[in-house]
Image 1 (spheres, rainbow, N blue to C red):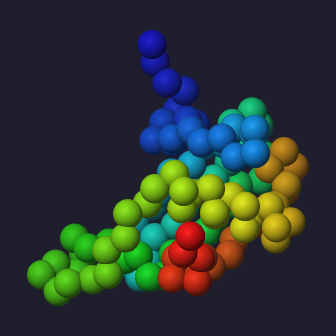
Image 2 (cartoon, rainbow, N blue to C red):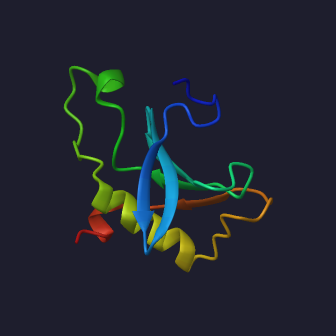
Length: 106
């Protein structure tokens, strides 16, 4: 079975009974978790910037803080996006916000 190009690289998560797709982009100054509705691929994406999670390969051999992106972390990102007014079904500009994992430890 082939995957549609819009869903390639995304993982599934269910938060409060609603399915979402998410993926992690790693960058030099931090990473970005992009979340979309699993039903509306053209809906508003949420982009959570994680400044305390830089790409370790870019900084090698200098050690950088290392966190594991778990479903629990992605769930907290989705909950924060919804609290900020994210509308995953709407066809509007993406919601971008900073998410510091140290401020949201469960």
